Length: 115
Picture 1 (cartoon, rainbow, N blue to C red):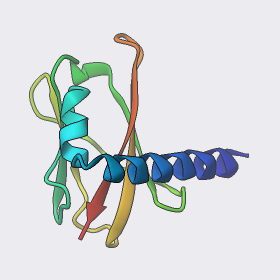
Picture 2: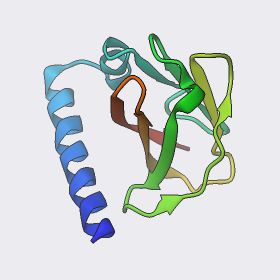
Picture 3: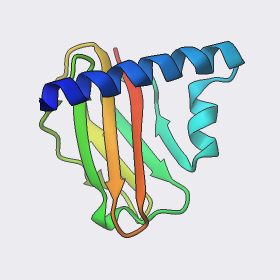
Picture 4: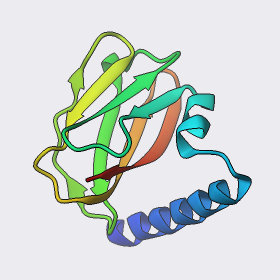
């Protein structure tokens, strides 16, 4: 059942990414509007996540590959508003980061490319 849920989530994200492409805006710019920035994207060694208004102390982070398999990660906190995740040993491809903070009621899923 969990796999079906992740598959549905991935399909909805793919449709959203296609719609974003038709609007002519870059995904990085759209993320910045929401107060969350993933960089560098694409990446080779690390992916950093910066939040404009959210303290990452209690942030829950999970990562999935593009087919929905959960990947074990250990986010490193860099200051009050930034996380860093090592992706150097991951296979090349698209990955999804699911972010959740109960205190601020924030939830979001973000896609990045590992080269």
